Amino acid sequence: FKLLNTFQEDGRKTTEFELLSLWPFLVENSGTPQQGAWSLGYSLIEYWTQNLTIEQLGERFEFWQRTNNN
Image (tube, rainbow, N blue to C red; front, side):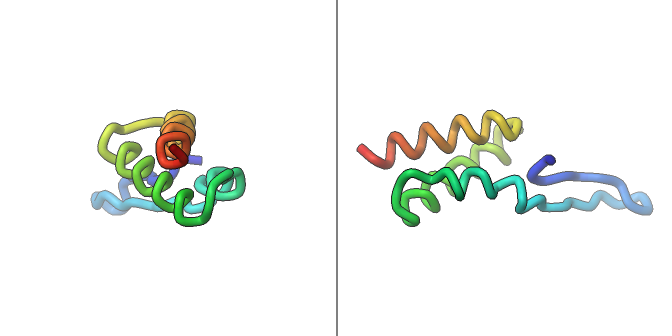
């Protein structure tokens, strides 16, 4: 699954958000809900602005979890 798909529909670009792709990050969150939300927010910004893969999103989520727990 891609988190945010862009596809053509009748000549127009349409985006589709795949929320289910986030589920593993939310379930495997080892911190508090606030830490998980903070880490996910930062990771999503990087995902969208740096054109990361889902795997890289997971790595960045783990990085922000470690950073936020210190």
